Amino acid sequence: MSSRKKKKAALYEKLRAATNSNAMNKTSIIVDASKYIGELKNKVDRLNKEIGTSSAPQNSLPAQVTVENLEKGFLINVFSEKNCPGLLVSILEAFDELGLEVLDARVSCEDNFQLEAIGGDQVRIKLLSWIYALPPSTPLKLRKPVFFASILNNQGHDAQVVKQAVLQAIHNWNQGS
Image (cartoon, rainbow, N blue to C red):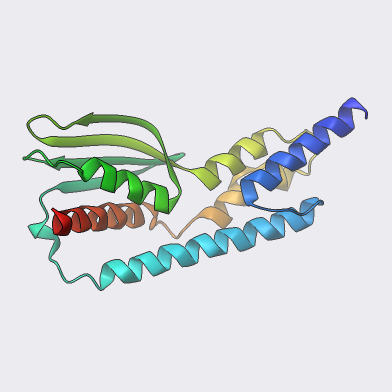
């Protein structure tokens, strides 16, 4: 197998892995990726509905949560004036359910609970890494991250979805403790 064919095969394998696709050609892989992204959006909508039906007022929760959009993910800050045993696990499980990968984190659980984490969207990170690995012969439209960003964009609600998931994790933890 020639070097060019090996590179092309490796590139397609990366794309299939990033998009949960078993397809063999580029068009089918992109179609599968679009379907997968649609499934993820449906999951986010379902989670939003579940969170919306929660009857507990958010101000009774023991922690403050802020989430900011970053270029490749989110900056998540959680603060509580009291020590919250088990809260970190609940928050990390929420990240996992959303498909967020913790890229960097600082946690303090001694006298109070404080979490500062940078979470990256696994699908977005994999697609962006694949895009940057494309050979120059790939059509320009497919090499632009903006092309995929329009598919991945959730109308600017990404940070809000993450915040709601973290608040729900805190609420669930609060109910269980």
